[in-house]
Length: 323
Image (cartoon, rainbow, N blue to C red; front, side, top):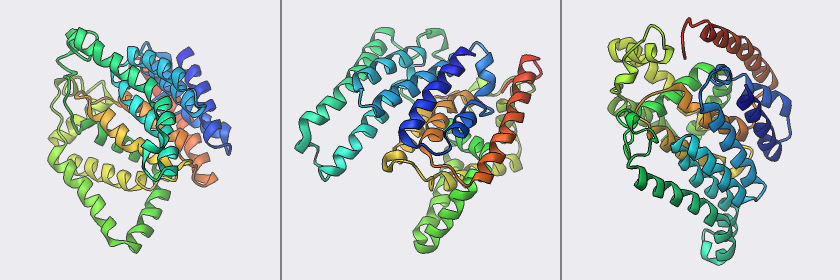
């Protein structure tokens, strides 16, 4: 519970730096996000990881890059894949300088170095740990389900599917903007075709951890259905593709907000085991960076999430199922 509240505090601080409008509602949506809320009451490190990454992002926004790197090192100690966010934070901070110099960073060498070196040190420390431990995962016994240096499409598409399920009203706004963009430039029509082609060619549920206990783990039930049922495979892919089109036209509070997408994709793809918890940091950062849609959509979303979050939490605590 403390980690969840800590995450809420740092989410508030991040959001206050980025956008002032509807601050309390945005924080409430973060806290009651149905995938996050139940884990606040469970002995998982994922909520702490979310809080630490948000704290590092806040330090970055405040131009405290050494502090950001130190907090990020703590996040990496909790979940090793969090090293990916060192690149995101560095690029987010560098973006205004790159634009001002016309994409010639050598014109502002001292400022670029001041920003980048703490994140480079954090990354080098991670690489040193990797070389010493012999595996990215601290517990070598888990290395068989968390292979090093391999990328998989499972979690990126599961993220899109979850977005399609929990964010339909927000995606509707993005889809309208996508339609207008595609009307003006027909090349955008290739985007959903490309996303579905990647899904058809690359999505696979091959980790044994996703093929067991489907009667208890909801995400495994979905994944097993996708692997065994033709219609479930099509439905999952279509929801993910539609969500990708909506997310691609997110209105961000800062011009470099789109940088979240490539880093989140890499972060998610680095895990073979498909888990809803792995999507929490990408969702938290997206909530913080986006501009809200119309008031009606956001209020309905919050109301539904409050009810759904309570249902999930109570059901999990009663051992009826697990997300």
